[in-house]
Amino acid sequence: MASTQGSRNLTTVLGIEPAIDSCVNRSITRIAESADSSQPINLGEWVEFYAFDVIEEVTFAKKMGFLEQGKDVDGTIAGIERMLKYSSRVGQAPEMHTSLLRYPLFPLLTVEGDLEIGGTHARASIRRNEELDIYQVEDLGKDMLSTWSNVKKNDPNEMSMRDIIVHTSTNVSAGPGTTSITLRGMIYFLCHNPEKMAKLIRTVDEADQEGLLSTSLRYKESSEPLKYVEAIMKETMRLHPGIGLLLERTVPVAGINICGQYLPGGIIVSVNAWVLHHDPKVFPDREAFIPETLARELSGRVGDYGEIHFHLWRWTQDMSRPSYRLCRDPEGRSRAT
Image (cartoon, rainbow, N blue to C red):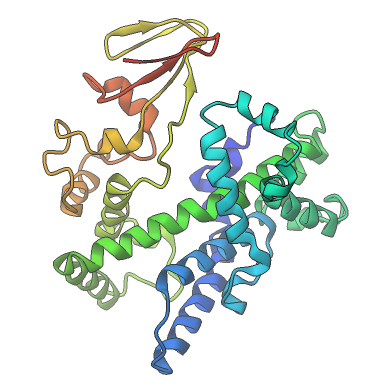
């Protein structure tokens, strides 16, 4: 399958940043409407609606309307939740999926339909653009679908229509969940740590009073004056990682030394972020919400500690001993070390 790493790097994502403004503005408007009417709202739901519209905008340059309608459009969220419950289990033993597909009652469990949710949205968007041919040169690059369309047009062997459907459906089915988990986590930890909330508000107010922030805030604007905001985000992901399962990586053909142990090529290794992020040898106050620790790292040396959530694989190679490691040999046998 074709790689999409280039379209998901920071530079490319920042190019799509203006498309998110409409989602931010609409989210603020809807929440303000509820506040003005003195009606209670489920902030967690609205954060999830925001995340879905953002991912759809970034992927297809078109929202599904979660924020506009204020509800789970077409049962998409519920369907993806059912799909994730299934895939999180079967993903640990992939051979189960083939066996379950032969089970006569499998279609009645609705899982099969749920597995198609992301793909359905992807195919619908692609049909909307007449299999991507409607894109003009000046439009290319404004969203991920058009970016991958450009790759396909320039070199059909580099990216096929199937590749595009798989990558866009992955965005829809996986992106909003992990995004909303982090945003919800930030709100939760700030509400339970009012002194951190006060410091955050003070930091934003000071930056705004100094004229460092525009109405439509950009990443480059916030990267320096709002380091504390970034530290809050990363501390949230340390305490509450968006993915609880193992993210497997295959050892290169030449083999590799990890934590003083040589592993031959082909071995699948992984480390659980929840275990690693709560290791008392690395984080003495492992259950405490302390963004200041990361803020100091981010203001000085942006190293492994500051990038722990985003470079988990590289970071484990530098640790003296991970708390837990699961290895699977090429024949599929698993072993914990």
